[in-house]
Amino acid sequence: MKNISLSIILLLMAVAPALAVGEEQQAPSEMRDFSFFVDTVAGPEKAEFGLVLRNNGDIPLSVEFPTSQKYEITVLDSKKNKVYQYSEGRAFAQVIETLVIKPKETVKWKESWDYSVEGKRIKEGEYTVIAKLKATAINREPITDSSLLKDVKKMYIPGENPVFMQIKAEGSKGEYKVNGEARPIDGKFYYSVEDGHNELIRQTEVALGSKYPEWKSFTINLSIPSNKLPQNGSLILNLYERSKESGEILHTFPVLLERFNAK
Image (cartoon, rainbow, N blue to C red; front, top):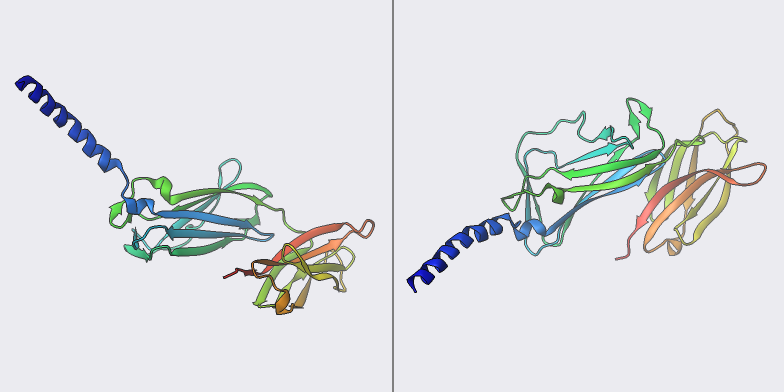
């Protein structure tokens, strides 16, 4: 009987440390109650990065950073060569910072890149975007699984548009102004406005009075009745020219005018 009891005690002593180690290896529930990801949009002239950190839990999330840098963004080409890094050329305060996010709330950051490397535009093609959150602790618990703080996305960067450049849009609620430069082959180009489902402004011609290769500035003023604006989705201006021979649409340049979100 004594031998059996002693065996049980020894077994429990052997198992207990293993159970303790298993408990230590489990990430605290707070660390599993968040999500981090990056959205990428490769426009005609620049890429936009939207970084999102969401508290999915029911208690506040306290995120600690060793410096004022909250995140890093790196872009690699098909050969895994680095073509862009957000932190290069920037200075960050060497102080510990803490970000507190309420339950079910989201923090968003936005950055952009003009596709240039040493003053030259990169080639058209597929690139890899790596976003990392630079946090070291969450709710005072050190982060041991770095994969929770990383997101990787593919992004196809288009070639440089030979007809339109330096396009900028401003305005809201149906009233917009678009500025830019163009050099269409026969001195004119076209535009239309749609929301992904409906064409709100039909094809309209713009005569510049100059031809390729001369660049010329232009301004387009748009007015769309409020009852025609989408409740949810994006309002897009499409700039393009047409082939004189076939009428085919060429060199399309989409411009985001406004995003709408149904409440």
